[in-house]
Image (tube, rainbow, N blue to C red; front, top):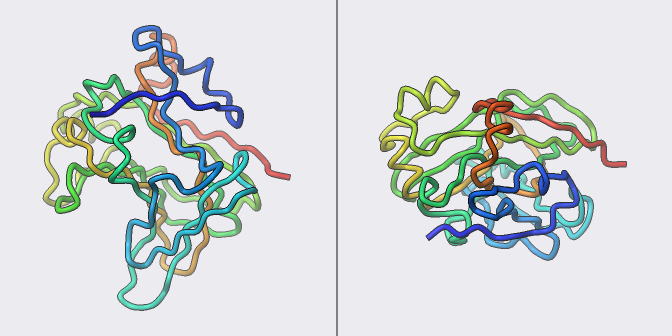
Length: 220
């Protein structure tokens, strides 16, 4: 079952913003300060490495694209860390995000993706095209209601993949959380601070209302 765990969040100042009075918790965050934690490459075209420095801040992971055929998009995912998996509605999860450094690469799309099983497609939120922004860490966050019906989820920017179950049932049985970078050519992408956000206060919900937030931090 999904649990809420506490991590130090010095890089992007989310502690005060996302403390939940109802749950008394702060976001679950993979900071990658010591290792890749439970995250691994999500496709056969993904080469993932751990970098002990250069993140936002501290360590981070990098995903690189292997152009050997057959060629797929690349990503990083966890399907083993129960802190990121399970029933989001029961766990009070109403947001998720990550920090990314695309270096000098233009990406066609960047997805936050949930699946209920490795054998099934799922739902993803597309943050859109990422243009080169040399050595800048950008934070991507989206708020959602894990109990939305499919029409509401779609209206709020979520895409149901072929063969996927309903949005609410998928988020009630999350078994795969993935960040995916989509590009037709070679790429290297840095990822840091992958996070789940528990139920925020009413003011935060009013401000976000299921909209994506993008924040930049220039590194050096």
